[in-house]
Amino acid sequence: MSSLVAHGFGGAPVPRLAPVPAGDRVVRVPLRGGAVPKRRLIAFVRRGAERQPPIARGLDALGRAVGQQGRSGRFTAMATKGE
Image (cartoon, rainbow, N blue to C red; front, top):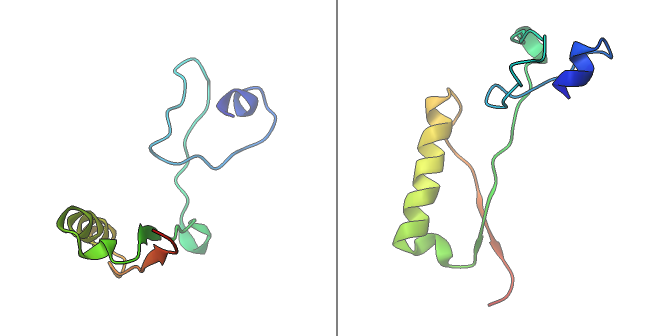
């Protein structure tokens, strides 16, 4: 993607954590204002699995990470049908 941008074929939204090859002559420009992209985090677990200690700790860690980013820190763990 960054190679296309480097060759003048437009611009592209790229996540901050995505690597950009050193040889590509591109500049990252932070988005500001109301145009900043948002993500929705949804955790899918088997029904009842959210009560298992390792999974509960993982879901709790995700909630804390979301909270550290200035969000509500709340999300829904959705159970799957089946076994």
